[in-house]
Length: 221
Picture 1 (cartoon, rainbow, N blue to C red):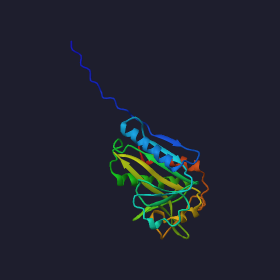
Picture 2 (spheres, rainbow, N blue to C red):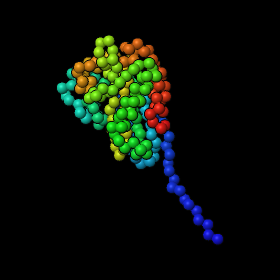
Picture 3 (cartoon, one colour):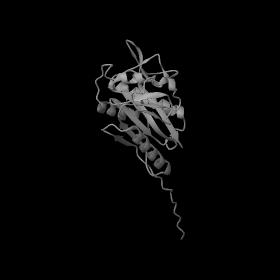
Picture 4 (cartoon, rainbow, N blue to C red):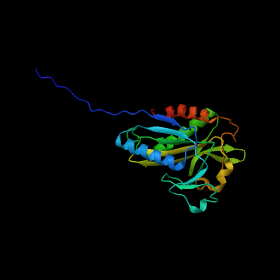
């Protein structure tokens, strides 16, 4: 009697890892860590990760940054491969670096991916108690205040072989005067705000919990 066995190919299924750094992370160290992680993801040696952190005060220049938008280089300036223009990172701002496998997630559509990150921010802020919105032609997430529309979150992504890195930044309670050294994302007409300036005294851990809760509403895991 002949017995036939069907051998199923082994699939390495990686779960999404959430990582939080309690101390500020130097920008070059963060970029190097993301590069290593993405390389390992491409090789199939590591899975996806969302890394929640803060940076010391600094400016980053995206691939579309204009030199004229750097008004005062009071902090270190780093050129980076993410999309977008100048932005500020510093204490009191939650940065979420998102390293995903878009091919595995059947999400090989960069515009849809960016839309999903925007929706993630909007739903996270709704949990905190803030209504925020997209604006046509303006990168980031915006809120309406008595003094006009202001930006509360920034987005900048990079994709290599359908692996994503860089991500989002949400202002919890940064020193908003630090944004004065740049034209944030090249937009001069509107200001920048934070959760605390809007009267929502949420902690960083409150925001982290909201981020994880809202994530499952947008993504599969």
